[in-house]
Length: 510
Image: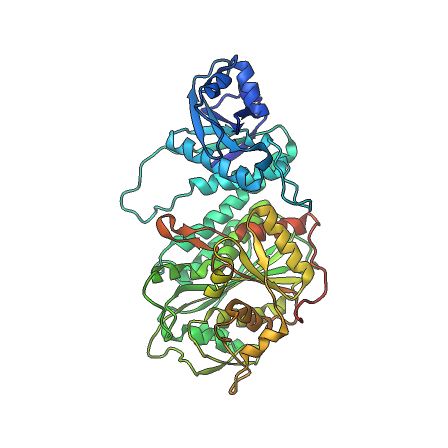
């Protein structure tokens, strides 16, 4: 889908379709009133018959409205005026795009972002026109996304190909361009997540990273198992022992700022398929374990978006990637391995493998002397129990970094919730035979997983995003969500704009 802006007044806009809003009542928005005046009350007459009461997400398509230059006018219900916040705005855009796709409209101009959007708080999250423009682009692309590349017979239909945001504001034009870049990053993350494990292997991810580097002139290095062995990455290499697929450590570097500026490092878990290893998972829904590389996909997607935006930041992406399979050479519960940091780990459950590959990748990040490190992982089912499929779990050893990520998530509507990282929980990781166990038991499973990772992040400001509940959807609409690409990209946009420099005390201790 192509995105742009259109400065024409709604009634004078030449397009296949213009989209205007109607509040509960019904009450016309300013853009809808302009169309109504031009058509000498056509919209009011239609609404007066009760054809569209204004319920949130309802739509009504009108053809050949007199006095307008567009072929069609799509009316979209916005719900109650006082309740029109960010969630309602997103739902109205989704409803509009679905109706346009079903109607076979090729191009449209959206005037829903001209409506003031209320916020539930008074912090620095104003939902202004620029926010509405960028959000409209992202939501529209998400509503129109399809993954059918592996079907022998693709569904033939003429969907929405071009969408313009109705605005004359130059700042909104920049917001649309940024939104379009974010959409490309999200599409990359979704495509990688939706690919099956027999295609999206560690070697395939490495190839995609090289392609990304070529597209945007990034530095790219892919380490093989021999190089990782020389570095002492015993934890990562332990996970990959049961599979025939070779493990990779992918390192990408984007330089948009001065060389002296310390980079942000993003570390993405890249388990391209997770059987659980010897601690085998139940077979039900195991197909969804192809999404266990969603952290890696989000790192590649964020790099794609940042490179397209040409943000003035320095960014490093580190992706440890392998499969977790049972086999004659696979690690077993009770095995002890040595990590790159020198710390030893007793393997109590081979299905707690993500933290094993991440801990060596975190140690590897020390060489970049990063200003901040954020790791992203579908790490624990316990996080799904705690937060469901709405919020990503956020852990951090630095209050400033945590707050910057939380605020970015609020603006991007890719929200996270901060969880405790207290020393009290570290007790659960004690092992009589090694420096630590790789699990801490059932209580607070997501917390103890983060505590495990914190032991390898003591030399920098660090945050951990547990996306096990937010990286994909199950059921009939199964598919990757590309979260947290919007959160991460917004966080980096804020740094580029000078509004998010992680500062604050360490938050590890109780």
